[in-house]
Length: 299
Image (tube, rainbow, N blue to C red; front, top):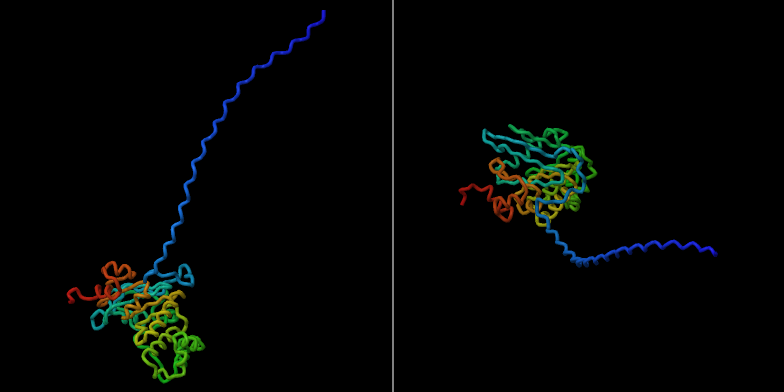
């Protein structure tokens, strides 16, 4: 018999087809990108909000001027009674008050020209009136002291030699304060405004980082006021500290970073202009000044 071939093995069962992977739902469309808002214009800075000085201030640098609890009496009557103030680098401090309120007395104490009865004063951490302090301060107090028989240039050269400053700066300073054309003229023949300019140039001998200025705009015409304002703004940008006393409140309003207002030797306000306007509910420095310095029973 013919052998029967082996039978083919049975086919394995067909595995079930996997369930189809569900198709994911399409993502919802992205919402349209909203238009960028227009940039809000930056409002102009008010006095009391200034840009930092151009020169960086070294960390740990001593405060240019610090006055704490100053008391000064004359014939038993207080000219200054417990006054406190400070001036930092790159800052203009408006020092305001009616006549006889103690502003000039305070400045004289700061310069070592008057001795306090109580309180503390430090000029860059030094005793006021000491050589270390005076070498860092330029001052114009009341009327400038000038060598009236000398020309403006020679006055500056002599004052520079007396202070140990560079006499070669005389022409530079005359140009800076707008007296380049009057340097050869006897300063005794200067007008009041020209004398103020020369007094300011004298205060700048030695390139001081602290300026103490009492009515620097006295006698100046509108062009002179503009020039002094630009100078003070330049000093601030250079990182100098300025203690500025003036009755020209519009100029102080445009320049001062901080205000110290005194009446009868005592502080009646200390802080930025905005705080004074808010406290007094006034809209300008002259109005606010009167609100804090006039007696309550004034008409």
